Length: 327
Image 1 (cartoon, helix red, strand yellow):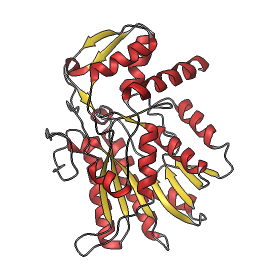
Image 2 (cartoon, rainbow, N blue to C red; image 1 turned 120 degrees about the vertical axis):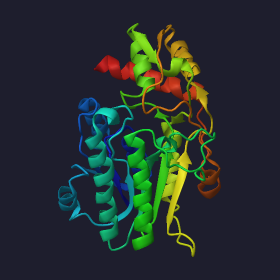
Image 3 (cartoon, rainbow, N blue to C red; image 1 turned 180 degrees about the horizontal axis):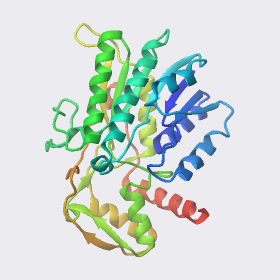
């Protein structure tokens, strides 16, 4: 099979692409390699993928509909699409809102139109986010709960993706599945995420900024578990019924809420160092807790996370120390 992976040079995109290549699939990757964070990290991820003869890469911005269409015009045999390209980051959306409208709304429309135009519509698996739950305080988060009170523009664009995908499933029969990711971490992760920032600051003996005075909980999902879930979903496209079009939404998390201060403690223990903790108030756009109900995806595709925070976080720390020593 040939799978299109957008955002292929991203943290999740690289791992998904490697897993597909490892099982013998052909992967077509696209990414705009923007400078939201260090482009050299994206280039290093991409270099790992380009060692595989079954990997093809195109640098293109998903918001550029004409450019993407031109790049993909000669590409045949796409049997599945994993759409991960997006402008990430909740806090960045407070200061750069148009980045999110372009990448997450216009870019998503580009992939919907591409899939619709193929002779045989592929299963579109796309990244949503736990952020869509917004002001909902009912834990664990369930896909049956309302998700119509976003507290950041980032969250609003991800909810918009779910609505757009549903519309295309209804109008054109495009099978699509949205996955609400819950705080993904692991080797080759993102420099704007807490696990990276905390590790870096502790190593430098600089203050670690901990919001809401540490009274935070997160459902942390190790990258290998997430990839397993994505590929399992890809193999199970939703079916049209009399009541619903072929569209599904699932939570993809670890099914366990962890205290943020325990998260910091694991990094401290792994490094053998003590953090200088700077306790701060809650930030705009943030939420106090996330916790994924994964019963639907467990029932439908057999997803079962296996990596605890105590096992997964040291793997990131070890990778970070090796990567930063080469930098």
